Image 1 (cartoon, rainbow, N blue to C red):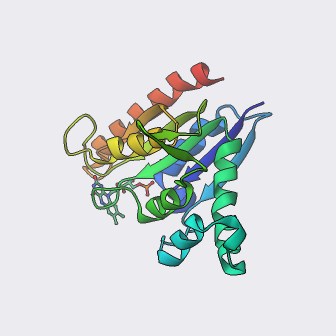
Image 2 (cartoon, helix red, strand yellow; image 1 turned 90 degrees about the horizontal axis):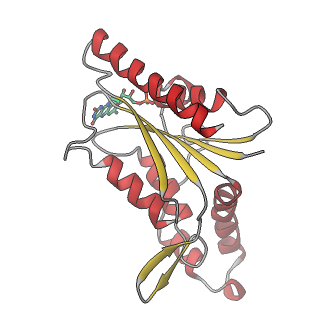
Image 3 (cartoon, rainbow, N blue to C red; image 1 turned 90 degrees about the vertical axis):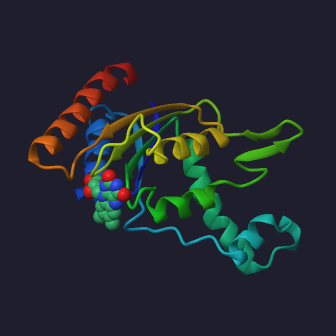
Length: 200
Ligand SMILES: Cc1cc2nc3c(=O)[nH]c(=O)nc-3n(C[C@H](O)[C@H](O)[C@H](O)COP(=O)(O)O)c2cc1C
């Protein structure tokens, strides 16, 4: 039995194309597997601010009660990640980047000494042995071009935490007319059909 953490970043929750694709992927197997769903539209993670970051870096023995609570909130998000064998991410493109809700989530799960540590050779991710699948939905077409700053960012961030085995599925051209949209979704669904047997 695997544990799957599905993080949905669409502002449209289950109606988002990225969520639909992630749901189709997870729904294609999943029987007997444990699925944890984090919907960042319904349960947004607050922006990282000085108070939160101050809590993350305070020594445990000197934390205030408020800092304990802020750290516990971040710990709970990290524990979901730690439990997961597989991470599934529904990733819309909004204004050329990742949704701000996802950035806020990333800011809460990147914690020195918890999910990565600094060494003389640079940072080392501590969440190893996991596989990630990213379902990216876009109005335009970017994959494989220098305008796709989103994919390298997400790949680099996950690698920073130690998650280096990452598969991207793209649904692109969704705002370029009906034919383009259908073609983009069909291509993504074909990729899902190819990925599911490899996963199961
Ligand atoms: C606020 C907003 C900003 C968007 N910005 C972009 C963009 O920069 N590039 C792009 O290709 N598509 C853009 N789109 C289109 C979305 O990528 C597309 O609707 C996609 O399906 C969003 O994923 P979702 O359906 O899972 O929410 C934008 C859509 C919205 C609502």
